[in-house]
Length: 459
Image 1 (cartoon, rainbow, N blue to C red):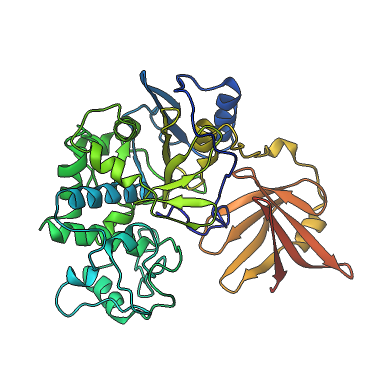
Image 2 (cartoon, rainbow, N blue to C red):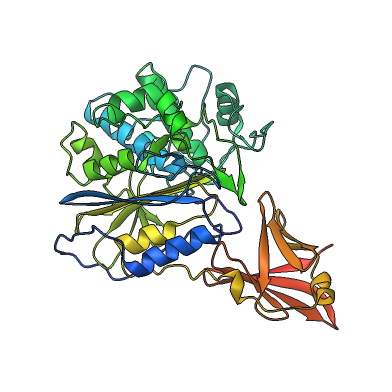
């Protein structure tokens, strides 16, 4: 669900920072470059994702570019195919907040303790209290996830997290930093924000979102509960090439519960760019305003994150649930927007960023056909468990002549030899190198995103 969920393949926040020009002419983006189509088709052929639905938005309109099928023997995808959009839901929540502020229902400076039920109070460190503004820009001091999150079904982990559990966490949590001090991406804070906005309107989050955003924009396939038509057009989520369960997120819905299509999401981005007339224009523009610059090289607005690009600021968010990854963003200076939806647990953000910002490079994902032969006896020596952090391990297993890599809480992936000691993945731009001491394998190094992360062999 997270936009910055720590996984093997997104170990750190991906920040693409290049020179930003202050004035740029509007551009047209109607077609995908042939070299990018080749990249997309290769990723589908290599099993990175079963499908990819892309919408390109500019001042002349919207074009759709669809690749792959919903599943191995599924239907061809189109602009009406339904995907989970995960944490892109957070920008919907930001717009709901902006609208309530503009309507005079609350202020960004209002303290959340004044809107929580009697007996429920969020503690703080220091004198400042948590406000709605802190929830929307990830400076509330709440952690990424609550410590009483203990799903009965890890394949649908948010389904049984209740409002009572949320309130219990708020009451018991002892903050580790002062409110507003620093940025910490928080699914919990965003889910709480959606909950409070719903309470303020005596409504459910879904009904509030549909009434405020989806219905005015005629986004009939943007819902949390799947309609009959959405069920017919749903692309099943995939993790490690296998179909997985959809996620249900009742309590923290504002953090990542929405499902949608590339057609509806293209309308949403077009509205954010001002191409679609709607009563949301002022709220959307309000939600784009920068609130702080505490997230590394990025700026943060109301839900939205903003990075510098060659042609202007890229206003964006991505999302991920158990079997889906999504990206949506736009550049006001060029008037271009992009929506990219996949039914895979592997990110394709690099494609979205590249379309909006030519300075953002595509990931160089290798093919298994580039692998070399390594003796089975050598492969056997690499089998084991490697600890990169106290709660993050990589397990290497072997079946026949094939090595597999599995990180804590994640699916298993094949790895292929580049030489006798270095292996690469075909689902993402990453590799590992095994290290020996006195002839024995004692550790590995994970290479990804310019980082080198060592892990000692512990089993």
